[in-house]
Image 1 (tube, rainbow, N blue to C red):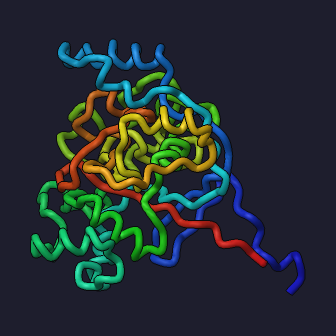
Image 2 (image 1 turned 180 degrees about the vertical axis):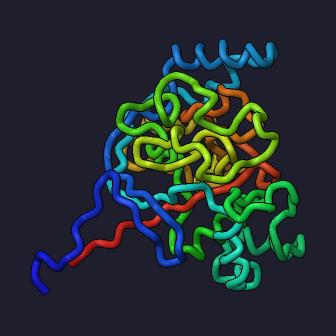
Length: 287
């Protein structure tokens, strides 16, 4: 084999179909500013108060301080939220019976609750191209393991949404309702390829709206402050077991401020009709 025969290293704009048949986009390594400035927090509050006067700045304070993050390795990211069709492949392959895909906590939850399938939300499973909802963090994690990848860390997810410009939304710094499924426009999830104008700099669709997406991290409100005080710039990840997990991106029912790329939701591990996931895969080096 000559050097010309070797596969080239992936670059921004590249796509691939992973071994399970799922389309992914390449996210190159880079730096960005994670979280929100004080001015952005105040802007979020002003935006939120248009919908709910009871919202206070405390809703957003876990996005501060804004801090530099370096993603040290490029990665493949699902181009779309995981669809009904792709999740069905996991189920058909014995995903809910094969213990090897499940973490210890996931196995305990699955057995205690006799879980054999995801929660069934009829309106959201009629189209194979709608995002799979009704899955909790454990189910999303097991699916990612089956795929040979992992759920995105908060840092990976936010970087894929914002890029090195640290945009407020995946497409730019202004909210545009035609670029996403939010504010109950459709009253339910939409096919994952319906909003091409809302894709992010790396080509990922639906990083704002449609479904909230599970991240790998456990939630700690002061995690950003810890990163700053410990000078943790490279690939931060909150792996300390907490009560809550993290969701990102907003959903079909979300007001605009929820759909900002820096917005963090801490939630208990339970299922709902607006929660889905996508998967990160490592780049395999060529020797």
